[in-house]
Image 1 (cartoon, protein in one colour):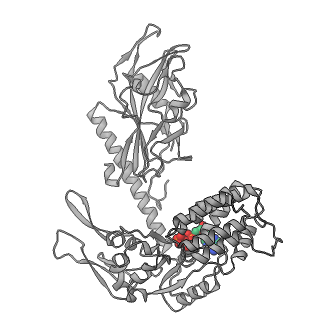
Image 2: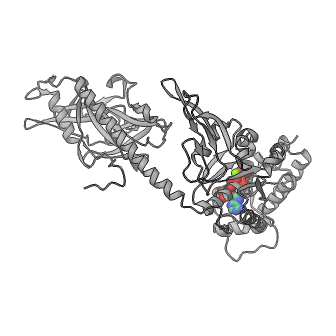
Image 3: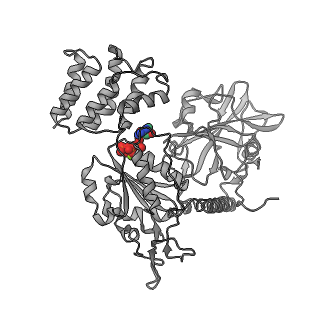
Length: 195
Length: 374
Ligand SMILES: Nc1ncnc2c1ncn2[C@@H]1O[C@H](COP(=O)(O)OP(=O)(O)OP(=O)(O)O)[C@@H](O)[C@H]1O
Ligand SMILES: [Mg+2]
């Protein structure tokens, strides 16, 4: 589909199979061990999940670089889509997280025209989950569509002695979908009045 | 419009199909929006002035010391209906900049290609290209795609002139050219593409006609003498040839540039040649170079010694900064000079910078210059 528009898909972090292959993580903060180092080229986008009053909520870690959601080789100027892999850090109690890789999600962003040519490791930065804005090469980057793709059965459960109850993948998905807002560019053909 | 990110179940066929549908839909809509926007823009472009209306090219503030003959000749060429211009002269005299500024005045937009030895007629005119599933189609090259605005062919000397403009030759001489490409490759009787020499309203699908704003403005670096002779007389005759030389008064040029960039005050007017003028003049006696490398050298010296007074002979540190600039930007232009010339340049630079004749720096300077010489 992308090739119709001479575009290619960039899959961020696809070369590293597991989180273990990426950079070391920290179970106390639920983030990369060394935020500066790992956030230069984030191989996964880490999100926090927590069971609060019996409801699962998702949040962006309050860490340096947590809003750098991906990087991609955009040097050819043909990137029409970028995916990033979301891995949850589930909070069990104060300062105790598990990185639960059985659960992953793909976040897909689509661009047309292609992303302006950048470097071989160009960052997507300053992601704002409340406004849907995304920064690329220092400027706000428009996108035409974005989707969250689940990669696990809805009924799959995660449980831990520290948690009052098991939580389901579908609950986590719902929490993440609630967290992430998107604002795709208005692509209505110009010249037509929109009501 | 702000909303929550839509969720698709990656493990379910139906959801995957829905994802593909939704995403293709987004691309289709975005592509349509882009086409609509481009269509709107092209209409605006074609409103640009045409070659038929007399347009006077003014002297440009951006360029200093360009001889008035340059403007006079450009305007004469335009006034007599000479459509195409050839700007030639030593390197770094502002030819490319001038071509862009002239295009700007004439049309407000231009297309530019930079000559290269591996350019082919496919790049310029176009040719068959695969479009998938084993099919090919004629894809127009840069010239035909932007047939409505000036085409700047920068550094024409670097490409095989006849190969690149050759196919255009008939057009340049006012004839219709039939291209060896058909509109429908699989249909033997489909019409071949043609390039018309003049604007024509309502062209057919297989016809390319220039819009009134189209013209070629080419630049040639005349260090490359061979290139000038490479062009056939017949082709050369289609262009108005304008020589863009170096500023007539080097010192005046340098002082004007320094005033403009506030490196010196308005009233400073040295009696003698300043060091940079002396160096440039010595270089020019051996090989003529335009302002561009000298400006690069000037900027380098200023970056290294921000407090420098360009009007005076430099102290030891400042001399080193001058040499850095000289090595970085002037030396590379001097490849292949004669060794006699290398010695005269070395001697003049040494004297302009008040270097110790027997010092390390003088020796290095001499050595590097002679090393380039044949
Ligand atoms: N006469 C001038 N006045 C002011 N700036 C100049 C002048 N000539 C050249 N420059 C500056 O030098 C730079 C290079 O100029 P430009 O590329 O137009 O020269 P050119 O003749 O095309 O060089 P080349 O032959 O190497 O391609 C530009 O930034 C231009 O502004
Ligand atoms: Mg040039």
